Length: 444
RNA sequence: GUGGCUAUAGCUCAGUUGGUUAGAGCAUCGGCUUGUGAUGCCGAGGGUCGCGGGUUCGAAUCCCGUUAGCCACCCCA
Image 1 (cartoon, chains in turn blue, brown):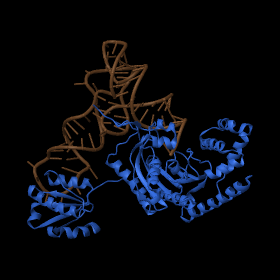
Image 2 (tube, rainbow, N blue to C red):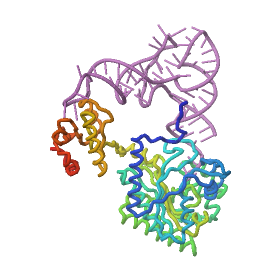
Image 3 (spheres, chains in turn blue, yellow):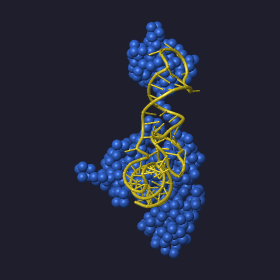
Image 4 (cartoon, rainbow, N blue to C red):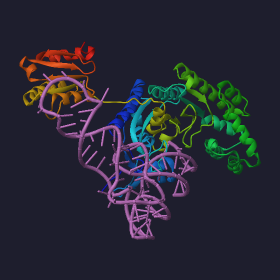
């Protein structure tokens, strides 16, 4: 009976596991650099948690089943609902702002394809309890720096930055109500992937004969890529009273956000692009997606503000902003740019032993070296010296420790620098004292 | 959920108009009489040719189905 992995699931042989850990390591160290705390949550959750957040339609995209207790459960497709529960349960005692991150595997029952599998790892980073754009700025900065930590730069990726609040103001200026705006945002989200006549068809039920002219104005707004143009565009919207004041305040927040991003040194990555609105209705303010600079391919990361979601999921009123970055698209990109380091794990020392008696001595020394943190390997069976030297070379070890009968009689161990071919004899009782010097300078 | 392409050894691939017991390179393992390189020499293991059915005297090869992979659509938290 031959077993295969389930569709869309991956196995990690050591080399792949090393690559995965490289990704995790970069993610984790950047999150810590911003003083985010790591948390974790269950992989299996009540199905209802996801229905509550995303609606009944979500079930078709979940790994869900009934457990033996008759509970409807699902493997987590995302972290945010679990996070909202964690936050909600302790909201009153958490020092704000809450800055947390998680690295974990997530599961979606979808057809696997390029950049998308059924099981994937995601970095989730969230700031809760801070309503101002300083939080948005820090998250976007963190996102840029984490991508940079993989060796990606300005010519490799861009952050497309948009704002659902601004859209709502613009749509209000068009005379649309809340429901109409929500529908239109859904259509704008698909603009890039839909041909123009189809889009007009979709807009018609909401705007009637106006649809084509309206689309023209939408396209005009999406064509804006610099802040000065955006500012004057907003200032010239036909808004009155509260809405006009809101627009003014929002432009101020844009200004602060962009100023912070520039000051943090990530200004060059930012592209104002109102074409991004993100499909999900719960986003409430700034939204952003990271893309390969060419604009091709799937988003590397995406996120935004979700000020109402924690409350919707039963928590307190808690403004929040967060993003998620998946490993699948990221690794595809890093590999295409030759930025995946080739990790080969090799020990610092490998023992070469003459016979049983010498092997016992080598084992004793190995135990001591390992006890103080060195990596050392020795052969499991007695083999010829020539063979052992070959294996030592192939192991990638830095030094061979040669335990022959002749050396041991004199109380020394011969140490060979495997890259240089040079050798030195060290009294066995000096070995522990001298290894750090050896590792630093090699053997001349 | 829909469509296109693909499937031969661990990997990369040969395999003739259908014709004996399906091959190569790489990798793996063993040996080359136990002290310094082996990038050498010799040898071995490893395949119901994705799976199931059909056509045929005979199928890796032709036909149908199915599963999986890749790609695109849908969707994308």
